[in-house]
Amino acid sequence: MINEIPEISLKRLPVYLNYLRNLDKEKNKYISSGAIALALGMGEVLVRKDLAYTEAVGRPKIGYLTEELITALESFLHCNEVRNAVIVGVGGIGRAILGYGGFKNYGIEMVAAFDSDEKKIGTTVAGKPVLSTTEFKSGLKQYNADMAVLTVPASAAQAVANELYEAGIKAILNFAPVQLTYPKHVIVRNIDVAARLAVLSTLIK
Amino acid sequence: MINEIPEISLKRLPVYLNYLRNLDKEKNKYISSGAIALALGMGEVLVRKDLAYTEAVGRPKIGYLTEELITALESFLHCNEVRNAVIVGVGGIGRAILGYGGFKNYGIEMVAAFDSDEKKIGTTVAGKPVLSTTEFKSGLKQYNADMAVLTVPASAAQAVANELYEAGIKAILNFAPVQLTYPKHVIVRNIDVAARLAVLSTLIK
Image (cartoon, rainbow over all chains, first blue to last red; front, side, top):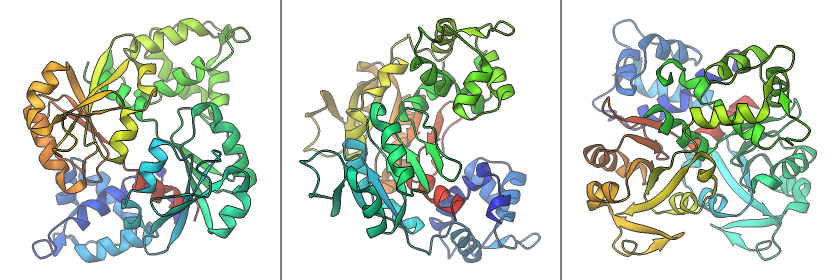
């Protein structure tokens, strides 16, 4: 099933889930794809197609039972399984992400951090232990984590990523403004805040 | 020109720019769309189409003069104009973004921050003044800013965004995990770190 859904659709599922979770369930026992589309400023056909990847079944003219649709989305996104992730790079962004509470909405737990700075290693940040970047393999194993959020400086990012691949990481969310090369069995995606803002500023010109 | 480029293409232009800027210019006086595509793991036709939106002209079998292509991308993305942005919400993420140096690569400057906490108002963070969220209109005018990065809690995001629209903001990059409603003359885009990680974790399942 997962292999069939285009990533662009997959990326919208958390948006629907988030919207549905915040709905007043008393007033919205049922919800139609049209109502979701209207609320989120999307096309109805797009929403219906995206939701069809889950196991939710809508009824003609009535829509989905809201709670069922939420359950279907949570199941598709594995929100009820605990999946552990680590932060690599305990600078400003890394620290902020360690302290962010929103991961639990998706069943994800930030379990540990890694840094190369001797002063940080052995301390805790937001209650999470900071390990040495020389210990990726044992650290990932110990904390049963296969995903990393990479928040090291751009100049170090590729070298650190290479060590993470070596240590068996499966997915990296990269905040460093560089395009990382990566082996086929690893998934790397980027968040470049400055680039996103540059795009916005171009759109309003 | 801007209106013609699809946002999906526009979002890739900073990726190309970033890659080209980091190239050794001595060894890469010319660069082909094929070489860029290979390095970034994209399709060549896609790269060539994206670059065609800029004014860069590639030569058959030779490619683009690297410096010219960089200049064309910078011009398209307005990197050489100063554009001011503000942070709204001086929590962990807001603080980290205020201290981030990467915005200047795109000619963007974080000029000020806003918060509702009396203890923060009047202080500086990363050298930037923290103003009151009751002063959006005068603050945006004083600092000549029309873009905001919104890093307030989810529960406050829509109300704060409404005040920003009222104060004349043109674009918002929203980190709060809620879909904001917004008027037609404003552009809002979202960065939801937890949702991105949830998508990654689904892809590796």
